[in-house]
Image 1 (spheres, rainbow, N blue to C red):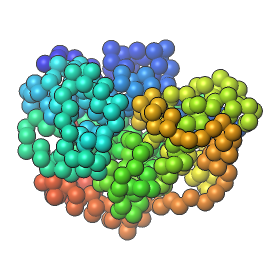
Image 2: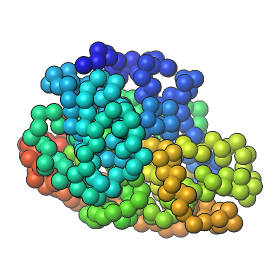
Image 3: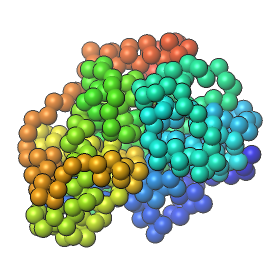
Length: 402
């Protein structure tokens, strides 16, 4: 087993750490992208945290590393079997290689081939269990009794990583912009660990709002729906065990077709966008390959919510992009649009003010609905019902430690 002793504090204090897991470029600057205002329909400042500098290009790298590190040190395991989806597939394979742990990834057959190949390149074995992304329950049920089994959806280490490291990155990302505070934080409905960052941001900026974004085809938080979709990095059909429900104020749905087309325009027709909207071409190039599908969905939804809430020039919106667009080149290429369509697509998705449904989930009724849905799912997986009940108390999350 590897002897790496890096901890959260060392990540924060070292601009170029041994493991690049703190949202910084090699230069030491926070890897943030500021979206040109000419291509958005809000006066607010929109800042995207990009994981481009992470080892695999995924924000799951940190949670995976510390989850396996904790397991290897606590249980003295030299092999691990992991339930991982989307970019977390490569993250856990990379982390296992760093820690010299033999790794088998358990994932559905419809997982993206880019991440599967990347995991194999890191030396991991990949075994398919189930077909669709929403088959997480099948994988957990089949493997939960194994002493060396871990799940990206149950990692307290992942939650704490994002609470400490990503929470600090969010604070630094808004420094010197607008009023240097966060007004809205948007993140995808993924493994649940990102709610650690959301709750950290809420503590530092108590008047801010947090929005969870999920695909309309699998709107679990919004209306208990689950289904197949192409927006990788979100929408798994259940509420993750480590998801802190108190971290979310609003839920908004993203449309698959709109997300794909908008990302294609930015990736393939940057010059057209720069010309049509009078934007410096360098500002558009800075967006290319930096934002993944779930990040683009969060961008579209956050602009619309900012319009509805009438944000102004002092307001800052921070979007956590879970991965980059690099893995999705084939999906983007398959979208049948031409450069002549670019102006219309950008106007419709990012600029025009139109009503989009969103849900306030801060009320007692909605909180109870989400708590019950989460508890029902994990109780069926054999989780301790006493702990599930304790998760209804804010003190549980305030006192969470590894």
